[in-house]
Length: 532
Image: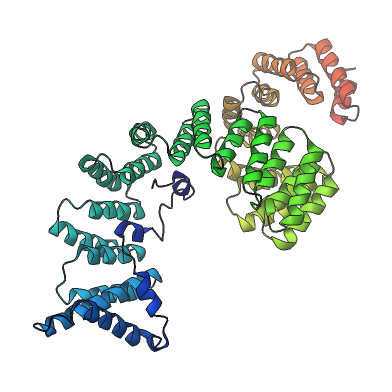
């Protein structure tokens, strides 16, 4: 059975932390008949009773017909009983007790590879890697080509996040057994974790030759192609997975996601409806459907789906957040506030809800209340970049410029490529006529990601104006107007540049245009009075 790359991808950098399906690797299971006998009343006397049961069972089945070496048979029966007790403890995740039992088996000088596998498995669960490796080395000492031991060594290295060592083990297994499907699929997964994506693709090509009718294989290959941004190839892979297994829920969802990436929202809606038909009990699928309606511009249908999701599953935050987003899109800010406040009743530290409420108050110019919510976000997440940005903007609006610069600087520290934060801080430096060279650097960094952003271009032109480079300032601010169109502030800046250049008539014309766009701009009014 192929290792599902979806499971591995969800673990991010915490690879294989904790329980691994080692029992499947070792292939050790208790006989169902034995388990049934343990339910008899006389076997419910705790450890000693169960131990005696296993010992007697071994003697009855294996030794009563042989009376010549009774002492040796007794030792074997005790060894067998300790081993099975270890298996029980291992299955119950009582790994310390399991190890004690397996060690007792070793006292009888039993060189069984299954015993060493069990020991290694328990040690890995406890993250005692050196002891696990010692147990596996004992197996390799008995059989240096033991592939099962090498496979478990690879699992050990994965649990330690030593990907290079795990890769070596899987490559050795595949070299010895080129048809080992589990080793090949595991090797592909490890390549993916190391971003060795082409090597992973090469392994998948080999897997497809050996198992061309595996829907899971096509699904995993689709995820890999998606990671490589090869959307069309991924789409083909997911289609193949669905052809081989029409009810493959994850593949149907993946096709919906690809349709969204291609902005084919009507097709995404169809895929999500198919997914709901496959798994009507799945509580997250209606949220995908609602989101697709939203992206498709069908706000009423999206709103209806989110409301139904909230009624059916009031413990899913994304339903509340999605509904609030619709209300904000419709400029229904009070309804959005109501929904987000309702969410906070059960999820008091929901950072997205707190941030959105802060933004709503910010837009309503209630900056102090906005600041209180942004601070709550930081109490829950001290590295929330958006909260730092909005705190900086809010403090700038209440004219606490020192705090504004402090928080904007923090936002840039967390995300050095945040163009809005870069421009905001740079523009503040320009307005305060300080750190002009640094301001120009910040604004140019913002423009690197958005070279045609009129606001950023205007900021840069304004910085050059403050430095006295009037020709460059005029050129940049004029370009900003061409990109943006009519804007009161940009025209006001252009008037200042022309006035500094001694071009009074052009300055007057620019300021007049600024005033027609914003009749309440007192600064522009004063400038026009002065020029007259």
